[in-house]
Image (cartoon, rainbow, N blue to C red; front, side, top):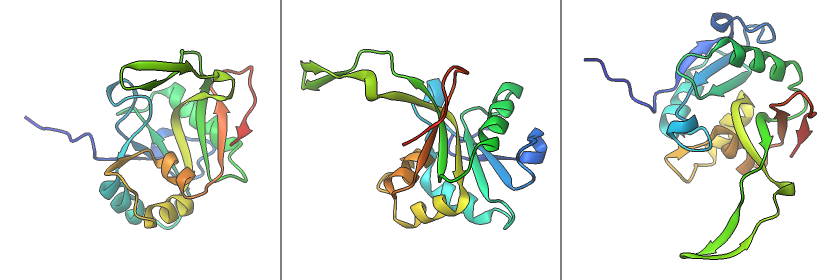
Length: 172
């Protein structure tokens, strides 16, 4: 029986997925995430470093999805994101936070959190390859990390791409 490891970043070229906006300079990676790994996509950092360094020179942008095989709706969303991906280091989908959030100490709830400044980040994550490489050179603190969190921690500019059509992209 064949086993697949969740930390292997499965690559898909933009041409393989039929990305219109990819122009052959985009590589899509399937990573651990979604309902199985929690609220954000996680990549095994040593594997991520190796995969990014192995990319052909013409690849300028990397995209991370939490699907083993991206579905057409995800590919269309990536195209939409790439069409407005300019002037930032990374872009992520988001939804306005709607769940109740609380600050706790041990088993005691201390207070609620105002959600007006919170969003829930979703995939796909679109990142400039050069910016991700620089973030990876700063020795990430954990073995498993979100690629976009790495870029943000290294001072990168992240654009929020709305999941709903009634919102417009913003920069964080």
